[in-house]
Amino acid sequence: MKGYEYHKPQTVKEAIDLMEGLENAKYIAGGTDVMVLIRQKKLAPARLISLRNIGDLNYMETEGGLRIGSAVTYNTIAKNDFVQRRYSALADAVKKVGSLQIRNVATMGGNICNAAPSADTACPLLVLDASVIIAGKTGEREMSLDDFFLGPNKVALEKGEILKGFTMPAFGENTGSAYFKHTRRQAMDLPMLGVAARVTIDIGGSEVGCKDAFCTVDSISNILKRLEDENLVCEDVRIAMGVVAPRPIRARKAEEALKGKVISEKLFEEIGEIAASESQPRDSIRGEAWYRRDMVKVLTKRAILKAVDRVIRPDDTIWPDRLW
Amino acid sequence: MKKEITFTLNNEKVIVEVDPKWTLLYLLREVFEMTGTKEGCGYGECGACTVIIDGQAVNSCLYPVMEAEGRQIVTIEGLMTKEGDLDPLQKAFVDEGAVQCGFCIPGMIMSSKALLDEKEKPTEDEIKECIEGNLCRCTGYVKIVDAIKTVADRR
Ligand SMILES: Cc1cc2nc3c(=O)[nH]c(=O)nc-3n(C[C@H](O)[C@H](O)[C@H](O)COP(=O)(O)OP(=O)(O)OC[C@H]3O[C@@H](n4cnc5c(N)ncnc54)[C@H](O)[C@@H]3O)c2cc1C
Ligand code: FES
Ligand code: FES
Image (cartoon, each protein chain N blue to C red):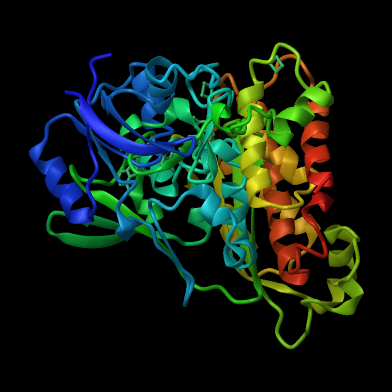
């Protein structure tokens, strides 16, 4: 191995200036992608510019939405109660990345900038309407995450630019979200498929959330049946799928088909079919295309059901995850 | 090309010259000759190289050595007391027969040490989670989990 110089700037500006003046340099955050690529000799930078010690990339604010700096580690996000309750799909994802050792150093900024089709935080961020803040030589700009992804391992960063962080809007109590990652083994596996959903339900006057009748370990399917007469309408919905296209994508036709409709499990099944028809998975060592497409159906329905469940029974501590 | 860095290794301040391209694992094994920390895969997959950095379990094989500057790092060699007694966790692994070939054990112990330092009474799920990044090809994990549990239960 040829080796590299290692720089540890303290501010975003210092990092950008360094990058501008140096050739064959690469940013490194937690290094769990970069260090592996170097070791595999797929990457041979002459210089690494570390983002780990920049305070401005390490923020987490929960007022009027959610703002997370790009260099915040997974484990920090996973431990946050507010994220768990209000941005559940993201919590589902960050808890399942790699292993604890990986989550202690790896960052969401690295996951998104590396832009693998299998990046676990991509789908949750997409359904949570995340936008990215980008810092460059001439200042900052913001764009939707959907526009940020250009293709496999390609994002809309100009040379030298740094992804500063993520911003998500605030969602009310009648919004729930969930992410399902399909893997061969529980820990330490990239998803062969990932599906996230966010659902906002119009609960109007009815006090659906936390009705005593739902203080049960009953399945959400049964609860939905009992709620049929309430005609609960899906006010807004996002569905995103990973590993089924060159980049993480929204299932827009499926979203259209669900928005404004009275919710039922049967409808969710149809939505799953539509999402599957929008996916274009390929055969790979992690799974064959037909299987992935079939699983899109299953996971889309499950993700929507779980998102709805989180609206109706918001307290995960009383109705723990093992039901899923 | 070499740079001088300072950090705390097993409660002792160390000043050492390093090549920026090294990983922390390389420094520990090849310069300090602390070979308790193992290299299994070198890719973050197996956890044999786990050390504790500022209280958190981390794969030293993916850790750029320059980031060690100023940090508190503990390796398996740092668990023994000055009198040469084993850490309760090490004793429990021996007593429960949680060790076969032993290659994964330093990593297992560092991962569970980080958990037990953070939580007084971890649940079984938390114990399993803390070693999800540690592969063992011999034991089948049951006795390893038992060993960690006995330490937590005795508290
Ligand atoms: C054993 C193992 C298991 C893994 N399991 C999973 C998994 O289950 N799911 C998953 O999605 N991923 C997984 N990964 C991949 C990896 O851990 C994640 O993608 C992680 O989030 C990368 O973050 P990082 O901080 O380590 O990135 P780094 O490796 O530091 O950087 C990744 C890329 O992003 C760039 N970059 C980083 N931060 C910025 C920034 N702020 N601005 C501009 N560019 C930036 C870097 O230049 C580099 O190109 C795994 C990796 C390993 C080694
Ligand atoms: S050697 Fe570091 S995880 Fe395997
Ligand atoms: S005891 Fe042999 S690998 Fe764990």
